[in-house]
Image 1: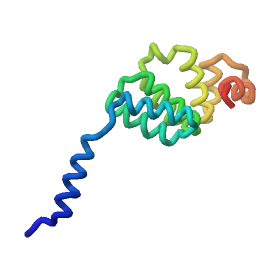
Image 2: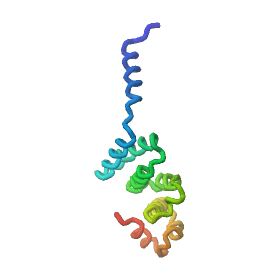
Image 3: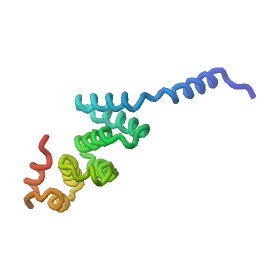
Image 4: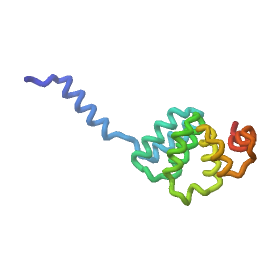
Length: 132
């Protein structure tokens, strides 16, 4: 059996590209730039790739949570928030992010407990979504 020259070239190219993943800092910068440009899909992809290389990068995780919140992915945002260390989750900014994720997930009662906000769902939505 002979090996096709095209197959050898393709396999070599594929192996070469596999080692060309950008550094996590580059992926974070690209994700941040995409987020600021409201290109949330690109931000999501870049940040996920960066977190594969640096899973403990809190700034990257928080930007990914913000990205999920912007595109209405409350479950994904919640999963990422729950994966953060417990001491970080008590910060006011993260409580607000968690409340927004809970609203997207339809967990209004949880928002009341976490934030102490009034019982009116409309007031919860207005308070938890300041960028709306």
